[in-house]
Image (cartoon, rainbow, N blue to C red; front, side):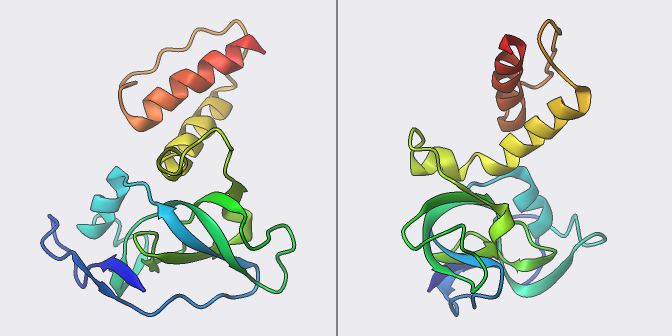
Length: 173
């Protein structure tokens, strides 16, 4: 399959390559997703630059990317909640940085996968998981609800803009 990879940390994109890599193996509790769109987040370049090396193991060559939207093309033996052809999205971060979403196919644990809302196109769904979950977890931690005033600094970015939208929705409840 085709994928973007890098073989060493670099502070820029000079190590990125596009080429052929083996298709990922499908294990128990996993789904295989044919990638239609993959979100690009600031953490991707931070990981590629080695900024998270003290926290996360990397196995080179690395396929970057944690956000994905696509179609289920395979399921593990114990994933009855998904079927071939399901349109899904996922925050597909793994404990080891290696087999990310900047590829034609990615495997991820079924518990990280959600059905793609019909109203979202592939690009919207592919860019939603990391920023959306970060915004949601932040608002949940603050217990934002009806009648609260919410100030979001930096609301022009992905997390901030989604926090504003979720905050408005929470205020209606």
